[in-house]
Image (cartoon, rainbow over all chains, first blue to last red; front, side, top):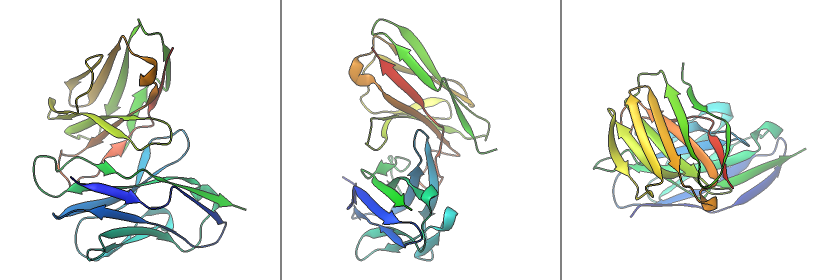
Length: 116
Length: 114
């Protein structure tokens, strides 16, 4: 079965510092990869997705992620964070093919706390 | 318009009550989803409707009853809930129930069962 591991449950960082949120997935089949953000008391918003093509994916709010097939990783990065980036970040995968291809499988989430 | 709306925002209900959650989208999406999210946990899929037909039921107790009256609306009927059912209930939609279409999430309904 597919699983997603977010290696850090909490990441504290100072404003304007760079940040990396780590995500690894386990799969022997082709998957699509996503990062979602959830601000307090809100629903989830898609930051970016990898379907195919360039392994460096740029998303909204200055975030980017790199797909690394050999390491089965999809780490999220931002070169300079703002206070407003404080939120919960979820990595998710879905199978490319098969009956469950629309199911999003989420990691446990990483709480990013940006301090002034 | 990329908005999924959910009503109510908050709901408090007793264990003997019957209530319904409502979700609406006007993006022409043909797949709609219900998720349950407990505090500090990721969302867990409950149901998927594709073209107004129930495609997935992730072994959800029968006290939760989904309904898709038309392609824009999704309801979740609640009856005889337990306190452990207290959670944030998220609705989502996507163009199709396939991997390459992103899911758009609503803001959720915060449910408290007393």
